[in-house]
Amino acid sequence: MTQIRQSAPRSLRDVDSRAPAVTRAVALLEELARRGPLSLTELARSLDLAKSTVANLCAALEDSHLIRRMDQRWALGYKVVELGQGFLAGTDLVAEFRRAATVLPVAAQETLLLAVLDDLDVVYLARHDGNQPVRLASDIGRRLPAVVTALGKAMLASLPPAELDRRLAAVDDLPVYTARSHRTMAELRADLDEIRQRGYSLDDEQNTEGITCVGVALPGTPDTPTAVSATMLTARVTPELRDSLAKDLTTLAKDLSRLAGS
Image (cartoon, rainbow, N blue to C red; front, side, top):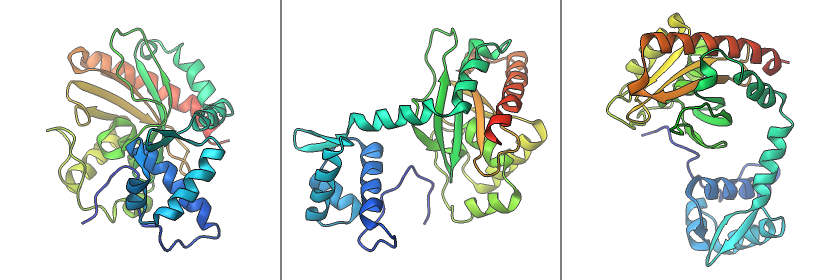
């Protein structure tokens, strides 16, 4: 039975790749990002590799400062942060999001996020912190299942039908985070239909109880689906605020799409 999950561990004993060492190193980094500090034995078990192979990978990655030792465990190194910041610094889309978010009439006061769709995961690229007293957004670089986020559902709804079907074809079980999360594919697809008609998505406590999000996909970005969202306490949500945020996010999405599509 197939489930949507975040960067699930995979067996790498027989790697079909021109550079198996690179593939294994990337998988090791992904595993540390997903689960935090791990021992050599835990990494070998998760990756289905011999401990000697994992030890060699760890030694090479440690020399490159991509991972570091923490007692008897391994964790991501500070070089990973440097590389991530380098990517963001060279991305015009992130810089423009940060600038444009500050001048939106209503949404500038809220927590806003920019994200891309990686298969069935949302990956957060940038955050704008408004003036609300509670910090409500996910950390940059974090992944979440697309089907429980406004960002993810907005991007899924923007996909061509054939591409959407391809991504959802292998999914049997949807992730359930709250009592309001979708339980069936029929519920999800009905939600996506409504998003297309309405022009924006809603996460009404499907990801976190007490939190509501509004999302809008950038138009014209089929190769790299991208979206923006606003996050707020459900207690603050009114029809007027929701509609105003959707309007601002639509404006922001159209402006950013010129960069994303270039």
